[in-house]
Length: 118
Length: 239
Image 1 (spheres, rainbow over the protein chains, first blue to last red):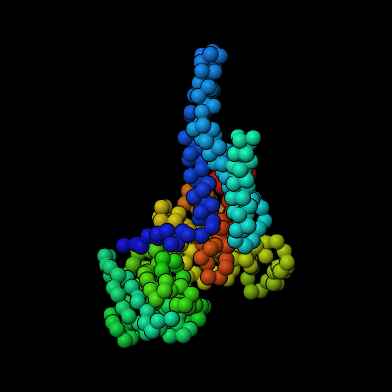
Image 2: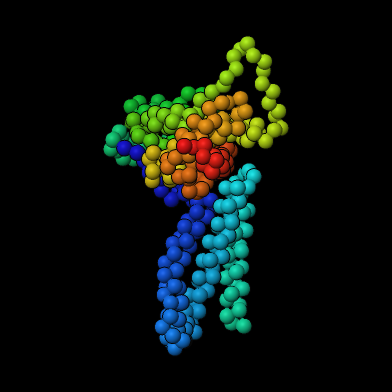
């Protein structure tokens, strides 16, 4: 029998950074087919695409769009952090990188939300 | 600070459960002191492993309130949840009995990672000159203090998900040797750590670096091995 860790052993910034990166990646992966499907509507003519795009002005779509921007910026910064870990010279726990990546993601979300209401 | 600690200790072999004990609380008490008190005064059948009691041997690591730690260098006051302590064996290793784990697979993986130094010189040759400030030597020094306690291995989720994964300690050892300019088994070692269960399996969760009692960062060594393995693969040296 082997003991298996629970959340107590995972409760530290690097593991949370891993989880945010993984979940944002999976959600973005789920979004991609929808994205291509929507773009693909253009093949059926202008009217079909415009008919769909009208729905995207609905508040729920805007909220979804905001979520997408936050996910993208978090995932991008998570990726930059990983590239720095893999290729850069560093030492220490690099928790400031995680804080910076999180701050950038949230700031991007705020900027987008402000632009929506402007 | 209450007068007694409420301690839950894992008891069992292939199956088991937590058993409650009450232990007098003392100033500057370590978790190892608590375990020793239980064995000497409450239940002599309790099995656990320790040797030096001062953080040199790496044999007393256990899971304390969910986190892998050296029990000898962990003060109760630092980790107790009020007056509650939960003491379990290390994760990711087979339990022999109670708090003692079978560490064979942990050390076997050091051998699989070619963790032995292979040199060419004999006692009749001149000493190799290694500059302490050289990049390679500094990288090796950063990981060389590992005492093989298994805390990183027990903290790593990739080891749980993929039991063949060589693990942070063995890869850290391989990285220190990869930076040893006297070693001449680099290619074989790189082949051993570049496979599916080697450095590329790491998910960079950083639990090893977070929990290492010696503040070693196996994450850095694993990233270094990925770079070396990548370079060697491009040059066709891993075939």
